[in-house]
Image (tube, rainbow, N blue to C red; front, side, top):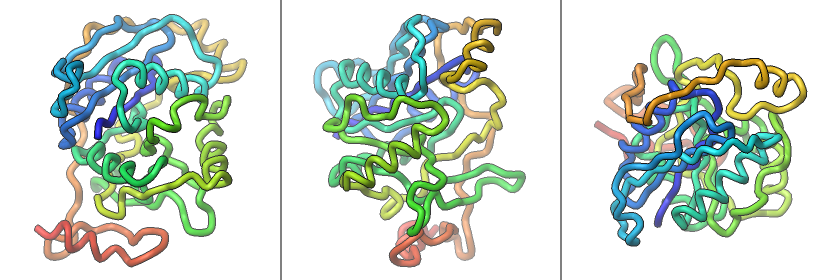
Length: 271
């Protein structure tokens, strides 16, 4: 299964090398990365293993698509990014990555596992980085399955590519979750088999959002000096992304919001 990580970016040139590095560490073989810049801040470029063009299944092809055609909302930008990515690589599944998050090496492998049997996958667990390293947090509960959306860990099958995200900013993730749940879209949790793979905002970014929405946002956009980065090259993130171990070397996390208490984690991740 070919999985494409899709990143919507804005004015975060200093973080894109970390995203590229995370992508190149992925253990899933048939993978690609598509970064979409709708403000023309970058040079359109691509790299990696171009064997993907020949339909081979061991590739790490990536592309940064830069166009000076700003989207009005983040939902609109995410839809456009996935559509462009689909035209470019024809993947079977599309993982939503954010430019200010980090992704552990098993991220795309976990998405491929979940999307083999579902059209929408989202992890029930994510990592947060604190003073003492990574700590695990639930993303939603059995009663409120829209709370704490963490859409930057979601993925969708190619059958859902199109006007998927609602035309909104700040609320597009919860609106989409409500829509998917109301329509009974087949859903899977990658954390049933894999440990959490999304490290949420590990760099504590204070830059502007990837896509600004609302009148105030566009006023800021008009007056701010845009960065002009060089060619994109991978760089290892300057933070510790080591998964913590519990007693006896086991992977120490909270149980999932429902179902078994997570004993599979201890079976799978004993040192």
